[in-house]
Image (cartoon, rainbow, N blue to C red; front, top):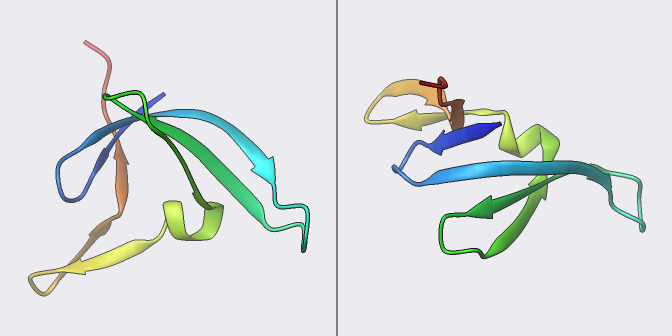
Length: 64
């Protein structure tokens, strides 16, 4: 599934993982340039304040 970051980048969700040290659920995602990133699942799906409005940090990009 593809997501748009609130700052504009498009990322592909690769998989969910578990952080070994404390079992935090993590999201593994890949940028268009091929770089791979991780972020706690809670943070990936949270709302952020953008110019006084709450928006999704990552929003699903509709297919088509």
